Length: 258
Image (cartoon, rainbow, N blue to C red):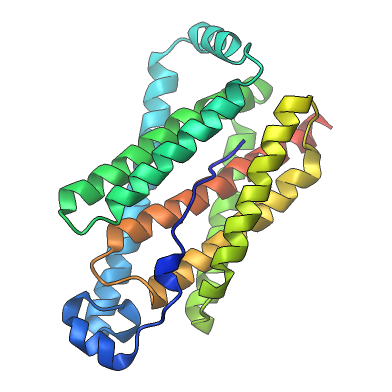
């Protein structure tokens, strides 16, 4: 299970020319904006990403502080006692993710964009509860969670720095990543339906997929988002970071059990 979301790659197929960018003015792509405007857009994007991560951590902290462990355990046993609970949860999350991204990409109002980002953060926080609960049962000292968070930060920081330094455009990866995500979703569904575990190597493969998404999303921040789309850019980056964290945590939990 993970943070799968259907992304609209069609908006990244056509690269804007300098003449088109001038016609757009301040709402043009960041790649063709003035240096000060481009820098401000990038700063806003990563500040919103940091805010989304902080909100995610705050929601999880509140959930685990307020809800007794016995209640969480009972809810998980009841819900996941149904064979196809993970499938229902996954498709429900995909639907919410699609709605949240539609709102975040909306040009109607900033309020709608922030509503989309907020909805997605809350959905991620809810879907992470079972995995975090199992991680805390396995390691009450929290070492696994700390290690997963640190590794996620290191991988994200390294990939972000690489894209910013090389200024590479990875928008060509969009359709490949989309179909790779579809295959991953199919693997999860088959695993639930036919009762087999996806194993250690699936987590490794998904870490690779999440890393590729981070490169893709970061290059889009540099080249293919408009300077007014900082909320949508932050949501895309947050989705990729959450996916990376999910499978790094799963991998560390599997390694410790083994």
